Length: 274
Ligand code: SKM
Image 1 (cartoon, rainbow, N blue to C red):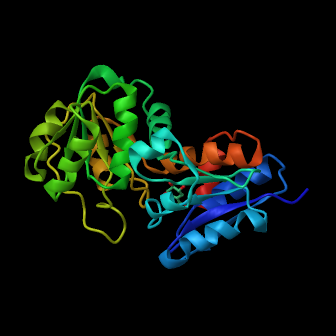
Image 2: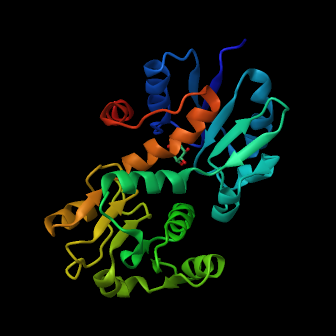
Image 3: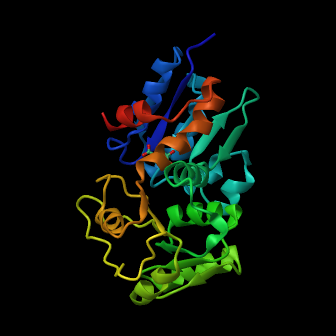
């Protein structure tokens, strides 16, 4: 049979760490397959995806800016992808049907649980910065884990209000300027914005009131230790960097495509960073 192919579709795609990550697992498990980065412009997305199964692809990851648009190219979609409103993992089935899933919420929660094993979801509120696609994945996972209150704060309030309308009671909205106050009650703080990333402005939020038993995590992983995480660490908080989310979200796809559930460990991290 043919050598199984998988890959990641984005625009741009050069920055993606997925090819090194999956390449590491293919090598580790002795699987004769390939994982290829593909830069596809929005107007070509659906057409490219339709040709992939014939070219030997068993599935692909989909990243920015295609995660919402790709939903129109799938035949079947998982409940969690529907709830998040985005797809990041496609599986091309033998019968020709395309299955769309979203593993970002799963990756977020696995990363958090492995980096902060003492964090109890039910212990109290989570404060989430940002209301974009990544926030939707995070909030889905937090609600499922039983977090009693999810306080969303966004620079533009209407986007956060949309989240509250979609996710219901457990989500409340707080103005960005008030964020310093709500942080005082938080048992978990999550940055889902791109603030703090290399080349972007810093996330500026007063953390003085943060409880030392709070867990702070950032989806940004360039740099690995953002200013948010460095400040939280100085205050005695447990911190979890964002690279692990990328590693863990890749697990379900790799398993489906290549038939082996890969392990996320220090070697995986090192390989992704190479
Ligand atoms: O959801 C993931 C996606 O599967 C792959 C990726 C990447 O390669 O940078 C980032 C996230 O969007």
